[in-house]
Length: 101
Image 1 (spheres, rainbow, N blue to C red):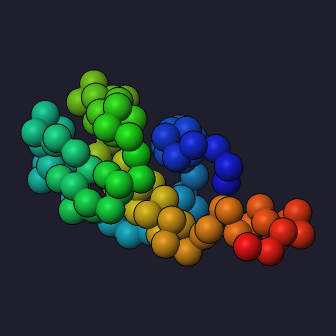
Image 2 (image 1 turned 180 degrees about the vertical axis):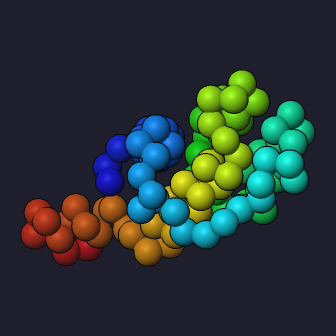
């Protein structure tokens, strides 16, 4: 969980584990990969806030090249967004080291 989110997203996309799904997202006919400018275009503006502009553009470029499918990226982004709402890495680190903030 300590890896940068861009690394975690790429790992989730490459391992293709059936467990790594939350819900169904737009199919490839609905979303045109060439017209996607940000993760907000997937209806997840909070996902854009988790990544740097360059990280986001790298993933979007890989969608355009066909490396990743839109639906797969949406599913994995949703996982990371949900984790960001429910997981505080600093609090976890502090509890493991005995620090109390």
